[in-house]
Structure formats: structure tokens, C-alpha cells
Amino acid sequence: MSAATDTRPANPRAGSVPVPLLGGWAPVRGLLVASIVVVAALVLAVVALGLGDLPLSPAEVVEALFATDGSFTSTVVRDWRLPRVLGALIFGAALAVSGAVFQSLTRNPLGSPDVIGFATGAYTGALIALTVVGAGAISASAGALAGGLLTAVVVYLLAYRRGMQGFRLIIVGIAVTAMLHAANLFLLLRAQEDVAMAAAIWGAGSISLLGWPTLVPAMVGLLLCSPGLLLIPGLRQLELGDDSAAAHGVSVERVRIGLVLFAVALVAIVTASTGPIAFVALAAPQVARRLAGSAGIPLISSAAVGALVLLSADLIAQQTLPVDLPVGIVTVVLGGAYLLTLLVREARSRS
Image (cartoon, rainbow, N blue to C red):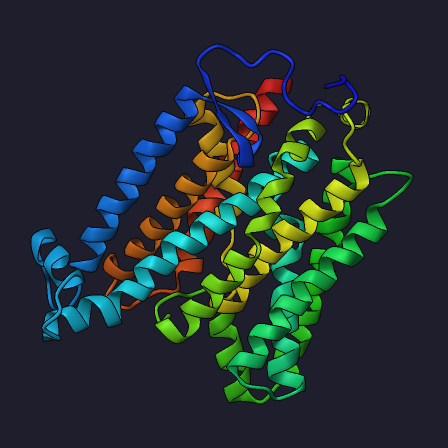
């Protein structure tokens, strides 16, 4: 195989194992961290399934999950609580993967779909469907998906200048986000009061009412996005620079556009199902990178951390106050603290 067509790392590091669909070689420490985080998320999921007006022990939760007698306990666990817990895990992982892709493409820890504006664009699409068209929940979800993808196209075209630079993409995305926030406020102010209230609550980002009728189509949509993982080896090459990637036979712009569409589709599907949930895509990849001790952003660890973060935030939203808060409010508080810490650390490193 010639050097021009060989996309594998030239010298895989010792202590790494091959992961073909996720970018070639993964450090053992990264896989170990991912395994520990996954176990922690599963343990927390069992605990979450036992919390509520009908408290259950972990043993009772496991028994109810596999029960075939149709008891009330199994109904509570499988029909009422499991969609919310499973949704938190799956949506957290999807948001984290989307954030990891964008942060790798932009080579910037601020390169997140909620910072660049794709989640806001999805919310705008849902608002147009709810307040202008007067559509229902299904059409609002379709509007959110269309809004996120259209925003991605607009940001990409505005940021493209004889190639794509990560910093330019972030700046353009922030500007588009500001305009979309203004448009969203305009739509809410002009809408009927009951529609505006419903849209505002949905816009806070919540999985409290998530059920199987909403979760299953979202899972199918995320599964249909899985072929985008085949582009991850190209992403690893792009991390070395466009020239180096092209020298290894990577079609730079084609791979970049495919990765952008893949990452936007992930966040748009989640937003269509739950409303915009901020900061998970921003924080989870960076936390995973520090835990794994890797130079790049590890995708598997990012997905595991994202699942754990969103489930933890949802438990905080459920259990800390007398009212059931939207999980998006908790992630904004936690993410704002993380972003402040990140900015302070960046300022100290440059001083």
C-alpha cells in the first residue's frame, strides 16, 4: 500500500489497540476510562430507575426489568421510568459525539454545536412549526431537524473562504446564534400565550415527559446516522492538518462536509425530541480528553461521559427541588461553571 493511500497512523503507539470504525488506534487508558464511565452510568441508571414516588431497591429494579408477569412494579420501571433514563443515556452520548466531532474539526474547545448555533437553529425550526404553521409535536420535531440542518448549511457557506478554518467557523456560528436568538424571541412574543408558553417550556430542554412513542423514532434516527462513524478515520487525519490529510489520500472538503452533516444530524435529532440541551456537547469531550490523557478527543470516552453527565443532570433536576426542573436548566448552570473555568484556565495559560 502506498503512502498516499494509507490512512493508518504510521507508528501506532505502544499500549494502543485497533478500533477500525473509530479512527484506527485507541490508547488502552482511553478504553479503560470509557469502560469505567460506562459502568458508572449503568449503575446510576439502575439507581435512577428506583427513585420516585415508588422507591425500589436495585434488586427490585433488575427484577422488574425482566419480569413477565405484568405487575405494577414492572409497569412503573419499564413503561414510565425506563424511557427517561434510557433517553438521558442515549441523548447524552449523541450530544457528546457531536461535540467531539466539532471540537476536532475546529481544533478548539469552544467548537460545540450549541455554541456554533446548530442547536439554536433546531429550536428556531421547531418554533416556526409551532407558532407560524401551527403544527403539532411531530411536525415540530421535523421542523427542528430541518432548522438544525439549514443552520449548518448557512454557517458553513458563510464561513467558507477557499477552505474551512475552525476559528472562522466558530465566529460565524456565534454571530448566527445571536441572530437566531433574536428571531426566537420575536417568534415567542408574537405567538399566542398558550403556544408561547408551551414552546418556551420545550425550549428549556426536558426529558421528563419522554416516552416510548418519542424515544423509539429518535433511536431509529440516531441509528441511521451511525454510518457517519465511517468518516472518523478521516477526522483523525484532518486533526493533523489539511495538507497532511490530503497527502494521505483524504478528500478534505468531502470528509469535512460529511462530518458536519453527521454531527448536526445527531444534535438536531436530540433537539427535536427534547428541546435544546446546552453544554453537554461542549463539556463532555473535554472532560473525556482529560480523563483519557489523550492529545486528541476520544470519541468512545466522550460518548460515555456525555451519557453519564446528562443522566446525572437529570437526576439533579428531579431530586434536588420540590418541582421537576427541565434538565436543560441544570446543564446550563453546570456548563456555565465549566465554561467559566475553561476561560480562566485559558487566560492563565497565556499570561
